[in-house]
Length: 89
Image (cartoon, rainbow, N blue to C red; front, top):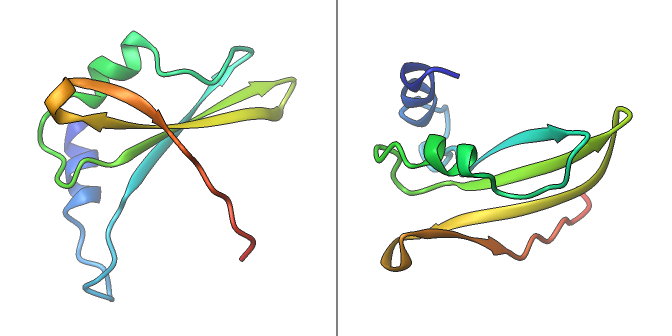
């Protein structure tokens, strides 16, 4: 996504004013679920408030084998893995 598309998404007017985008996801095909240096560079664009969490999926042979969530810790200027709890709908 371009920075303009992401800015539009994060500033979108939802029908319910309490709704907002809280996270982004992408996959690492044939690789582990980790927050790469490229992910860090793309995430540090500085305009998203509040800072979203980032979900990274590990995909091998068209199957998701693992996923990890990361969030930015401002006072440490780094991303850290955070606990991800998936609850049934």
